[in-house]
Structures are given as structure tokens and as C-alpha cells.
Amino acid sequence: MKNLLSLEKLERNDMETILGRAAVFKRDRATHSRTLLAGQTWALIFSKSSTRTRVSFEVGLREFGAQVMFLSAGEIQLGRGEPIKDTARVMGRMIHGAVIRTFAQTDVEEFARYSGLPTVNALTDSEHPCQILADIFTITERRGPMTGKVVTFIGDGACNVPLSWVFAAARLGFELRIAAPKGYQPPAELLQRAGGNVVVTEDIAAAVRGADVLYTDVWVSMGKEQESAQRLHDLSRYQINDAVVKLARPDALVMHCLPAYRGKEIDEATFEAHADTIFTQAENRLHAQKAIIHWMVS
Image (cartoon, rainbow, N blue to C red; front, top):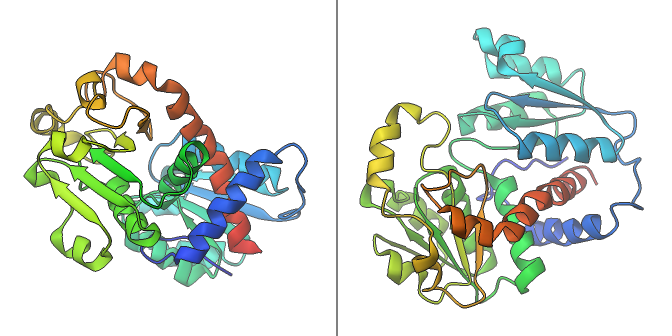
């Protein structure tokens, strides 16, 4: 049994296996076997709201033949203070796997340890491994292998998405540049721990020049709503727009993990000009999630 709890803990060969299977599941969606999880019940335990993550996992699990339960924190005893390890031990005696979207990374890790179930980190405040695997699949699908590529993240460089990009860069050997204000940069300890070719700067132009991929995310992540006004002020210069895109390679991909707040992290015209890439990126969540599940249980 395997878990996907963090890209930091995912070996390169396992990452490559997942990416390869995602391509197969996308190509053969209409014909692949739908019995992998027949007779099983999986739980989606979400303390944070979701569109793409919920839909992609629920559809993917059903296409593998599983029954799926969606449980928000408010619907179960977690919402009334039951320890995660107790919930995990109950679930471990009744279901066959779990997909968890929550705040603390320790909650996902504790659930996996006490439940004994294959467990997926579907997002925590520390990492978003499923998103980055789907993103890398999208890049390779459109531009070939990651080796030698330059990915530039612009915005809040200390949130879960760029932190997962840091670990991916170390595993797959591409260059990652993060353009963010001083207070929104990844911790130095994490960068040192991850290794890899990662450049962090406040200079947007330097980070973007010659990049193969430009990537952004919301400026106000879930749980940070009370900081909204300050964040919008601090990050106002870190927008992907036409002037920024022109500094990158002529065929650069513009990506956004959604939801997008037009006029903030990306302007309307740039979003719509690159909508095909962005919504293919969203679609690929399904194929990547299926590849993750297949890797975990096979």
C-alpha cells in the first residue's frame, strides 16, 4: 500500500510512473478497465471547499468502479473536535481509501498512519501535490520533457502550490523561478532542504525572461481571508499580463490552477488568451488523479 502525502517524499521514479500513466488514462479513457476498485468504498474528507479536486477524484474513483462518499468536516465528528487519529481508526475498519483536503499537513499524515488506508493529500496549507503532478503532465503533453525547462511562478511564493513546485523541480531537474515580495517567499530552510535549481527574487522581469511556463495562483488562499486587504496591496505588482508574457519565450505556456480572480493575479485578456491551456490543465486533474490512485493500489 502506498500514500501520496507530499511531493517532498515522492521519489522521481514514482513521479515519472504517475505522469506516464496519466497520459495512458487520458488517451484510453473510453476503453480502459473500470474494475480496479470494484467493490470498494472510498471517502473524500474535505475541510476546504473544492471544485476541480472534488470532481476529478469523485469521477476518477467511479470510473475505476469504486463507490464514493463525500464528507465535509461539518458533517462528521471532526467538525466537533474528534481527534483525527480516532476518525482514522474508525474509517480504517470500514472503507478502502481516503482523499483528504484540509488545513494542516500533520492531519493528513496522522490519518494515513492511524487508518492504514491508502491516503491522498488533496491539498493542505503546506502542499498541493496532486495539482503539480497534473500541471507537469500538462506541460509535458504540450512542450515535451521537463528537462531544461524554466517554470516561473509569480505571486504568493510561500503558499502550497509554489512549495510543491519547489520539490518537483528538485526531483525532475528543471529550473524554477519564484517572483514574490520578500514576505511572500518560501522559507530558506525549505529551499535548502529541497535542493534543486530554484531562484527566488522580487524582480519579476528577471524571473520571467526566457521562461517556458508562467504560473500563478490566487493571492488570498483559503484560510487567509482576514489578510485579504494587506495581501492585495502587497502583491499588486505581481500580476501576469501582456507586458509580463512578452518577456517570456514566444511560445510560453500561461497556467493557473484556478479559481482565477481576473484583474488581480492575472488580467482578463491574458487569461482568455491562454484559456485553452488553463482549462486543459484543469481537465488533466482527472487523468492525473486516476494515475495517482492506480499507482497507490497496484
